[in-house]
Length: 430
Image 1: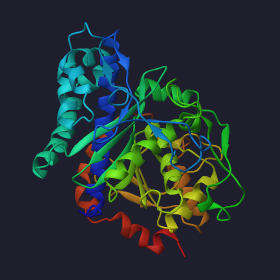
Image 2: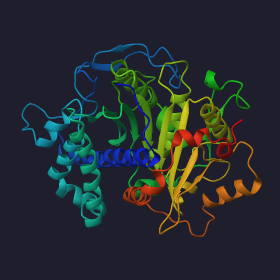
Image 3: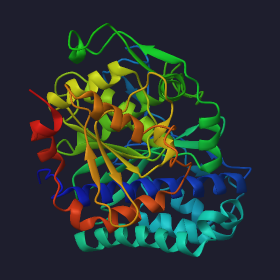
């Protein structure tokens, strides 16, 4: 079956919010399972049909936008699952994590089996009645989608990656056979982790050069400047010593996507994430959308939540070039006065559509940084996303985003992202 775009913005944003939260919870479970088993070892990556694969020698630089060409075999199963030694009696959690893909119902089962440890480590999420109710709603919605589809394992988490030294999952790839969608989901930091990121937010930027061919001559100069911390997270050498010496997390994502697309060539690619995950999803979406020709199906869609700024004005220019070419759709969702979206500040820009959600009866506000915008419009948008706004506050609550999307269901059902891009009055596109 061919891919069909979601019928409205409510469906599209709710789906991304749910899968983003699912991966966040999955990551917390993995942390607990890893901490509980000193004998566990880290395994590798599998293809959708159980073919064991790995990245071989790259014929390109770590930041090249082409898919690595040489892929050889590894001996183990799903990427970074936990394999006990021969004398270890496997728990139900370990049995699930040995599978080559994991469903939402199995993630829920993992939570239930490890609930006491999760309550102890993350009481604000797993020992809070309101938070648990919101979590259950997310699980039940995704499980309901699968049951209604009558398809076996219709939504699965396929490949997941850790920052090797800290055992913190950076991304997970979800295959959705119901919506014909492959989603790269970047795990957001917990509250302490995000506070650390903000507290150490370097103003230094790191250049990416040369520009991808799709952007050559389309923006001024020959490089884009990115926030160094976010950029390094993706493009520094990966920590896994089994990988090629030039392997980066971005390279690994390309390999995983290429393997899935070989089997599911009609699927579309999405990226998403919350907070730190939102920042990473924006950068990766830009590079995926810049891949030459039909290497990846276009457009790439990025829908993220509470994303900090990631790049300079040339990042904004590059995004708008790709949006006009139909290679990229980018929507950032922000809650009113969420200070996560206000940093970093000096010479950093947001890009794409912004959907602001409010408490109370105020309607959602949709804005776009027009190519030729008025000074007052630019100032108003910058002030709303500014730490100088006296009403801004530091929050970290993924559940609140899903709740506000649900509260604005009626309004969001009247909006379509593709139609927004066709509205030249809104975008200022020629």
